Image (cartoon, rainbow, N blue to C red):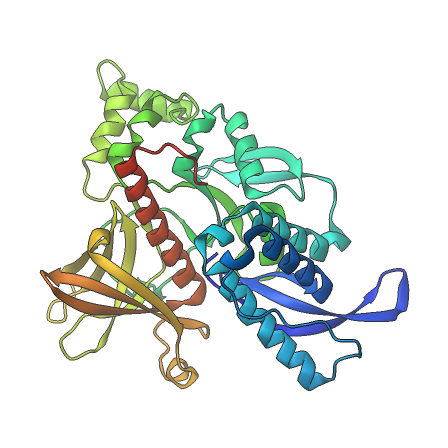
Length: 407
């Protein structure tokens, strides 16, 4: 988890007793609604954390129980205190990744969604080339459980799960004026789906997808897809011996065979590794402060090969594409914060009302740091944070020779 908040509360009634009302707290995780949770469930979670971590639990004070019903002022104070407490809890990596937190937040989501849940569901997951795979799973299965079932469905070795993740994605919006793209791209083709959320093990992919698609009439319908989350092509060598990962449609296989005398598909994949644009996740456009005057420039953002690429049009020649390359090993720290509302109303380049600033403290030369500022949608800021965190974890694992699964 990168960010957690409780922006609102609601009053609900017991299904079997309409006169029994209670308050629930709307929890948002990583920029998206997660669940509506009663105070007593949060209190139970707090007790488990205290019992498990003791003095190692560094978090703000948990708001105490009250005998009498809370008025609006007291209810709002409790909401703010719970939000600060949960944010403090997840700020510790050991606590945030613990099974207690994962299981509790999964239970919160399942309980909140239980009114419309069916026990067994057929889940559609899109492969990187857009082909759907259908798996049967329980509606309350966690992300890791769904990943394991997907591996078995496509005959992929389970040890390779750590190289992949499940994402919520939708069709890319048309970034155009009068039919022309607002930004020139270095490639004429790109993956047609835009990843907006990386599904983690504290949630059910089925429920998260349902919550993201409240209406069939909304502009974008979110799909679940599997994407590679390894950031160094050299680490993908073990994947070339996995039959589940190298299966291709018959027509594509025929073309590859005709192009290569001996049909060496592994060599074809290795050749892909050498291409400049291989291995990048193409995110939504961002505004970046790249000019000496401090003006914001509309850029295409790519993440891959353990670096960030910001591609933008040259000021003097719109036909020329400039690239700003930021190596992950030179990023000392990054900070995410909400944009001022007045700025968002005056800036329509990204056509979005929920914006964040993403600041990178970057080593430009020895002992000299510079701050790069990006402005983007809140969900994309969270996703970029998760990607950078994943890159850092991958670097640490490769140095330590670890093979632990982190998916």
